[in-house]
Length: 301
Image (cartoon, rainbow, N blue to C red; front, side):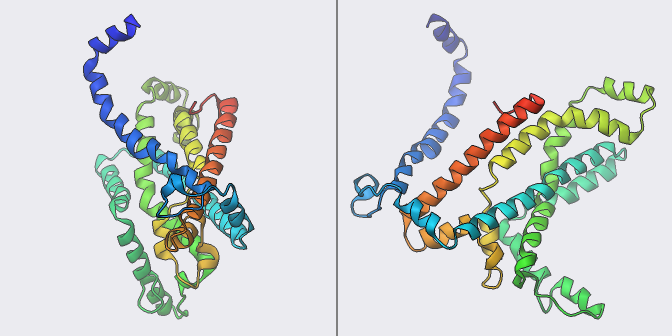
């Protein structure tokens, strides 16, 4: 106790700095978690959350018995895995490529071009996608028509929705996501590069035997976090890109919760579906973390 008191007195400025973010997480993150009981109640506005009657797993059963259940889960997982398979390795490759560039001006140019899309808002990004892919005057259809081909309603084709969503997301976020890998590459001991040079290693061999092992812990942590949020697919962009023609592949859990749970004021049902989603993500996070710890000794905890 005396040690703790002495530490508090000695480093009181550091503890003072910690208080605001701690209060933020308590007020806006942990306190709202208490209202998760809404998933097990039949919410009544006049009675409030704690005064509403308990209904147990009623809302979970309604969701599981819903004809849309497997479609929603399939669409969510398919898009998430597609996004992970494409969007995860590309920032790594971009970071490795930028690390090999020797021209400072060219490197800055590439960084600016790849980083810039990240700062475009989701609404503006979706508007750009719609303009580029418009059936009549869109850029891609104009090119197709110039080549003597028929126009394609890209956003009206359910099979194309996933690719449009994933690849536009890669274009927007790959440059920004590569920053953390560039930082990890900057922390590799230069002696290792000198040793590889003395041994006559080529650039590819340096990447394989120096760069990749050096950033492997970072890659592992980010992969664990990405897999742990595989069911937490973003809502805004998918919802804005949706239309009645592509809902067969674009309707995911988050958009379904918004339409059925929030627009129809069925808050208990929306909370139940959100809790189900979070529990799946938590299970995946724990599972992947344990696998990574056993295989590579790199994990979150």
